[in-house]
Length: 56
Ligand code: FES
Image (cartoon, rainbow, N blue to C red; front, top):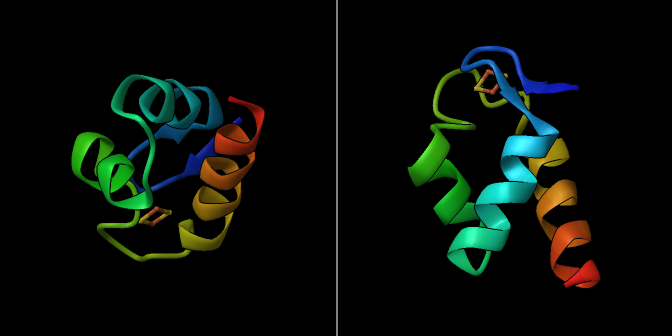
């Protein structure tokens, strides 16, 4: 499912980035560009990052 419409980023991409980088909101922003335009995806991105970290 698309989380960031501006950049066309899916929840799967966010999970993969968290897994490959050790996981932080900043790394998702830097690696994928999420939250860098309108910012409406920030809360959902944060939730996915936290959920992924909790499952690791
Ligand atoms: Fe992610 Fe706009 S939806 S920056």
